[in-house]
Image 1 (cartoon, rainbow, N blue to C red):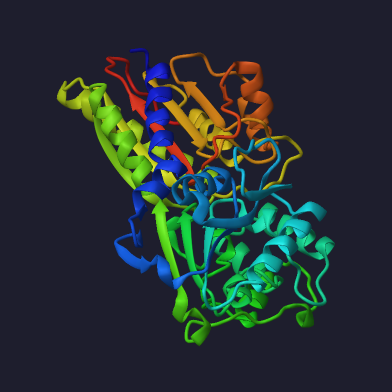
Image 2 (cartoon, rainbow, N blue to C red):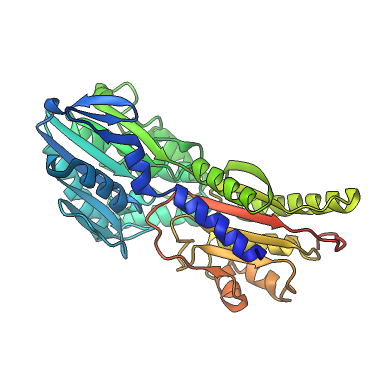
Length: 433
């Protein structure tokens, strides 16, 4: 199988493992008298009504898994999803909103979900379905905060290289629904959140800004983050969130139903079935995209050097997951995955037999219509590739070179998958430029 086709096949296996319908149904089971969630039973007789609320790129599929399972036992619900995501739900209202930055529809969705949660009583069960994108899709500004403030702060933090943990720590203190506030609104109902993780380390409080999770961060933490990235914001604008010892969380359970680790493991199995010796570097990689690209390129060079030294010829695949950041200094168009491939391609200039792939499992990469990119070092490198990288213009580089990966919305999100394939080669390795 040609290496480009092999990389796409490996990525498809990673996507299949992140299927949100399958993830929910493997964790939630319905019996005659009980509902089992991740092995813990709940007596159906203890609930008068069951609801669904939530947001994210996988929210429709997750809600459909519950709707299909519960049937007439489901009273209704409300979720928020990105534009372009189709719905097959009959009892759950679907709101469409903007991503990656919230808009007025995000606020309308947030209000609808907050109303539903606030109407719940002690004999209600509220399922919350949370996946990547929830922070932008379900917005409810805290008192004294405007939508314009939230958008401005989010954009500045993202373009200045803030990690998802830092970004969401600030978002929680500008919100009346994130950082445990959705659980507060639903109290004293029983709340079960089913979560598809798009955060390194599966930190519950950071996924979707933790709407049903006690928040370990404080206003002081948010203030320090804003100062670190030089983002101006009046101190009085920040508001505190429910903390871990708050009794409102006694009837709240948060369950991770899918993650990047599971997708990388599926990718590993697929690569091995295709005849590659496969190495998983990590599923928790973060940091500046270009630095991570150079690190991956160095590992590929080491494999090629080892093969040249030992005479051992084998096909090697190494995989990594996580989510990097891009500090934007140019005026071009691109995303972290496209920039990773371009930076790695430049770092591998002078080598042959390496295929570089990186894509977001949600089907989006930055403000583009591509999920990522793919490139091969065997093809001559364009003389102006460095200029495109310097201008953060990886999208237009790969649009010209034919390397964009376009999947459309995948209906899931477990961060990024990076694949480097090293094929058997006798070509000499030159030093990096």
